[in-house]
Amino acid sequence: MSAETEPSEEQLRAAYEEELSRIDTTDMIAQTAVSLLNIGARRLAPAADPSPGQAAAPGNEPMPGQDLEQARDAIDAVRALLEILERRIPVAELRPLRDALSRLQMAYAQAVGPAGPGASPSGAGEATPPQPVAPAGAGAGQQPADSDGTAPGPGPAESSGRLWVPGR
Image (tube, rainbow, N blue to C red; front, top):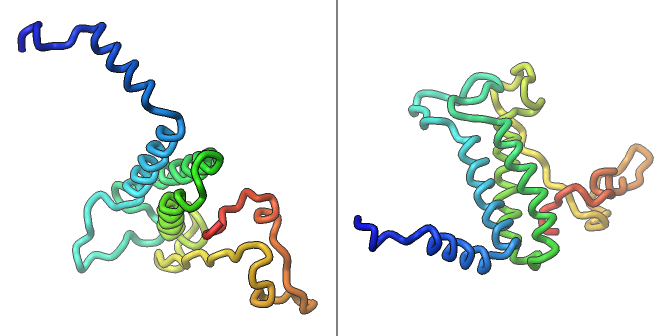
């Protein structure tokens, strides 16, 4: 290419400044959350699909190509970013991000197994999926009763407002 067709440093700087003026923080945070969800899913996936006769890695050992620590970091980061996005974007519009985060959390829970990372294998790698948590005050008659026959209230995590509950 000749020097005439290449933009000058000043033109590149002006184009960059123009692009920055069009992007707002909400858009950037949403894009970052989507990227982190994709990275987290990628870190939970095995490097290569196992052959039909080959089962998942024995016990709770990560499959080749998995990086559970990075997947956990991606989950934590998306949860934090969603708190910020909730201030700017209607909850209904965040539903796809929340659904993707929920699926990633379930996949992570299955990857680490029922006792968590580093636990001794006891269930041959079979993880029990987490049970959904009912919103506080919803269906109180459907909650299991305590030993004294009363329905338990929300736990400390849900009461603090820090626990993410599907549909909220």
